[in-house]
Image (cartoon, rainbow, N blue to C red; front, side, top):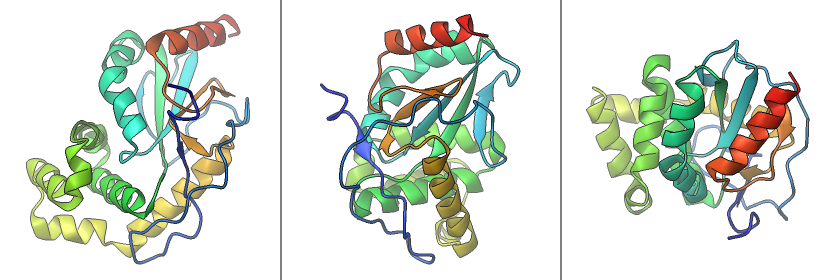
Amino acid sequence: MSSLLMSRRLAVLGLPTLALAGLALAACDKKAGAGASAATALPADMSLGNPAAKVTVVEYASVACPVCGHWYKDIWPSFKAKYVDTGKVHFIYREMLVGDSDEVTTASAGFLLARCAGPGNYFKIVDAVYNSQPGLFADPRGVLLNIAKSSGMTEAQFDACIRDPAALDALQTRVAANAKKDSVNATPTFVINGKSMDPGFHPLSDLDAAIAAAAAKT
């Protein structure tokens, strides 16, 4: 499947402050900007691995993006074991909102839930949301509520979390900043030591080559 078909266009502007809703897709698919920024963590970033590693891999993704879910299920476990757990790579995850209004609504709720769970549980929630696909799309609230309850939250706490206007404002700000940071307009997009790969699904072999090239330059 081509990179064009294996990517999702972003809807990153004009999210209403008090509602979880999205906008139309971008007019066209474009390549992410190459080398648009240094590979440094931002204050709101969530990351794993060794911050002092020679290689930093940034992933721009959405928990409600089917392509991102496919990558997470099929590639992430091997990538994490090979690079993150060994300290060879500092992995930074940046939140994006993609697709139609239903996808953006679901992703917004998923990201807010992950943030409410706290930094130590953020990736546990992200993992659970990705692994709930495709059932997530049939019953977003039910699936996310079950994930929240499994992490110790009550239904009332879950509802308060995903309806928090201040948290939603902060998510909007992160998404807009993330899209601008590396000129990203499709997910998943990987940026390795500041150099963007073509957006879309990438097998581990693609990432191996890009990481090796980045390491060779350090």
